[in-house]
Image (cartoon, rainbow, N blue to C red; front, side, top):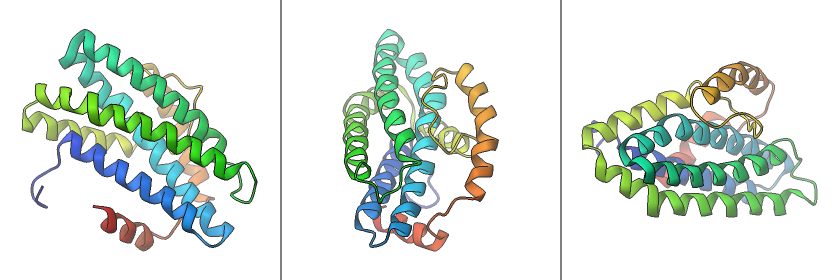
Length: 199
């Protein structure tokens, strides 16, 4: 993909997956509780937005283009997302200094990597086969735009199907974004540097 050629949906989601792994690695390698907390917050912010954006853009596209097979695949995806959201909900307010933090982070990453494997091996090849390159790029743009308006924290009890999820997200997002103003994150240059190193 060149800088002037927009990414496909597989590329957009794959790039998010790489960034999520980098944020998790940064939590593990950070030397201070303060830095671990900042990277935990970054992981929470990115993963919450990623999951909801998939549910609002990619999953409806799979159901539309793949029919019954798409519905079965997205049901599996939603179950996997629910496990990730529940882990993330606990992790997002847990101090890295606690004994529970690292095992919970490891469980979240195991659940997340199981889900990523399902997307890479099952979802994305089937969906990309049904989409033209232009349709895939348009879906990727929708996915990226949706991340700008979704909640930035995990809400595992919220609905996870379009229309109901959209409404719940619109209610939660402003509160999450206000809380983000009071939350420590890595500085933008540090995040940008980490992005360049994985892409």
